[in-house]
Length: 171
Image (cartoon, rainbow, N blue to C red; front, side, top):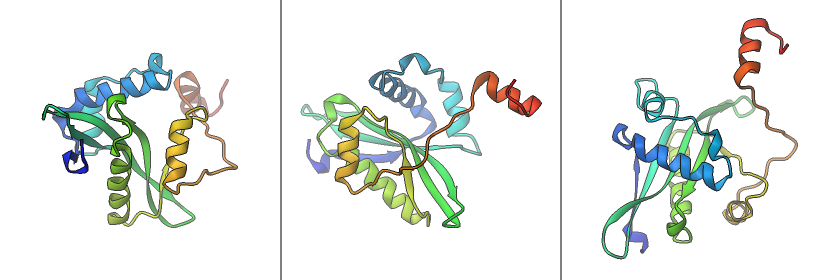
């Protein structure tokens, strides 16, 4: 594959099954496959409804035999920086299938997302990486990204989320 054999496009409703397969492959790579409960229906409702909550870029690459295959994806959404007073983009998932790694697809997806971040007048592009994922950390360091220190991610789900919504307390 060469640089001319790569196409990056916005995902459409018909890509829901493909996006779900990417999510499952990423989860397996991250050793979190048992945590995936997403369905095609949920993805359609969240990504392609009138009020979409996130967007997806799909990377398609030509193979040696001339066929075109989905090689990777980036799923992202807007956030907001009160300190900058402007929106940002948060990259939730970036994944390139193993057989396509090392061919520049990850950087091409990030470059496209960086262009979109600038075109939308966003102040920054953020993401997280698992602390054990040395290949990803090395890749992100190589493109000039820097680690944000001093913050710990928190998450509220399941019963704790319901308890807070209903009672205001996590009891």
